[in-house]
Image 1 (cartoon, rainbow, N blue to C red):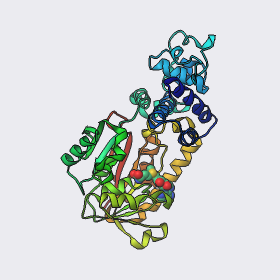
Image 2: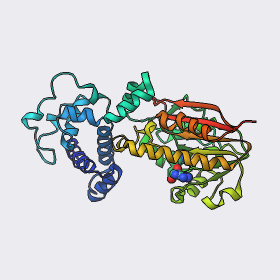
Image 3: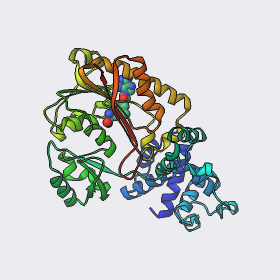
Image 4: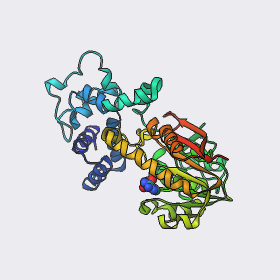
Length: 387
Ligand SMILES: C[S@@+](CC[C@H](N)C(=O)[O-])C[C@H]1O[C@@H](n2cnc3c(N)ncnc32)[C@H](O)[C@@H]1O
């Protein structure tokens, strides 16, 4: 495909996303219906779509419309590319620019467009994050780093780095976790690299890894909201620990056996009805469902779709999960709470509300990870019963 044809494809996809369809679904369907597009074309189109979604308000302002076409014109201007060179109408290129599209609006962009958040979230960021609000919103506008976790059950850091390099994946150590590697070159080669296929490394954000690093030693640990099992796998790699994984939606753990086999570790999946029978556990990790605000670089659609009602519902779910999970913690054990959110409503406020509802519990440690070039935004707190 020509560069201009890729732009035209991104416009088509963004229009469908604008109609409310999930970007991933539209991209997959587009790929199926346009088999002539090669992997490089599909990757470039995907980048356009997600780059736009991260800066949608800015792109709409620069492109003078929030249609797919306006957004792509705006994205190109944001990246310092003159859209006239691609909007030629030749071949599969988008139609030439109309008069009103020829120039970006004059004057400074209004501040409201620069945050690239809905207005209600700008207010929430300002209220909850104070001085860090604007910087955090800005960081959410760039691409997230690609990060690997070295599976210490199978490989040393040195072995993993060397094997990755042989497959064209260049990495450097990430400061957030001793086993985390930031990918500098060759991210698209990871899934076919022997180091990945043989379980020497896993894809996992560095803040997520740091949340697991901080968990206290335990013989029996329950990952109460295991999802795909990223944190269960990291815990199991410690060795000398029995890890149980649970999720209210067991289908989320469907790939876990495959990932366990690759990583050379064992995890026991538990249905909700079996949790108490197998308990108590000296460590219960609640990696709670959340708005994902700390990882909106990876899933930028979520920031445009979130409503205040959904945030309130999510907070209520977080409360009820903590109430259920705390019953499974052994005497002297730890209830660890984590979210990939940067909103205090989902973090410290949930811990404070839990402590107010449960006499005898205390918070012994907590940490917030900011959105940074090293990792996603995360929060974690360790709760224990006080003597
Ligand atoms: C943030 S994700 C977990 C990510 C996972 N721990 C990882 O590191 O890959 C939250 C998970 O909580 C699950 N969940 C939602 N409500 C739940 C509940 N009441 N009990 C247990 N799990 C729940 C969701 O199905 C989702 O998979």
